[in-house]
Image 1: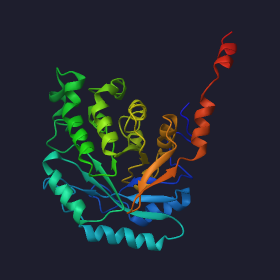
Image 2: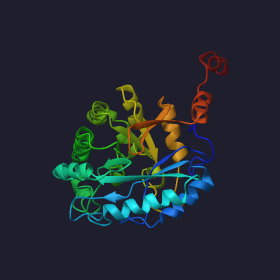
Image 3: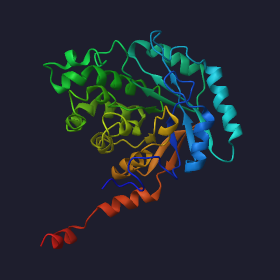
Length: 304
């Protein structure tokens, strides 16, 4: 059982937060902000974080794509239009690169966001790009294959720049056909440095459900990494659909909440421009976890 309620793969309903959404102010998205807001009202999603892309590499698609003032106006004006129906927060998803860390730090010092996500993406010159990945993985161990990506994610976690680190095992999307998601999930030890960095920096771990509609067919990160985060002392988690298209709004988000509940998390970590806030995970997800647990005596009788 998945531990979710409703369809396992579809638009979620009646949730307190979708903390990762893109609008037409991201170069790879086409959704007007009011479309997301209307979907939230229809589905009972109480709060949204609009987290359009910002890149600092001049070769990257979101470099200087939509300047800060334009993005902020779009979100703040939408928040006013939809006040009383859905809360809309001004966030950002910044592509982290160690070589650009000081530029990112300067940007975040000079610009006020309600909520920030840092993510490591796969760019055209990455070894994981579609025209390079087969050559790159040939003859390498799993650890060697993922090391360049995971090292950058660890640096992002240690930077302390962000409220949340997005899709920490996103590299698996580009390795399908070479390394299976199951192979990567079976090696959670590769993620221990990242998880420790998250815990030490107080950065939240995101469960990003876009992987359910992409090649991995599972959230980012896998359940094994969410469990590892909990085991090593992690307490700050969040969930987002990472929708870039209208039909992807809140897609599979109930599975993201369920993954957190199954790992023992009872609250989401979020920020609304001030101090961090804690948002309860709806009780139905914890109830579903309890329903999945068969008492040992009952199990013994069933097998007699």
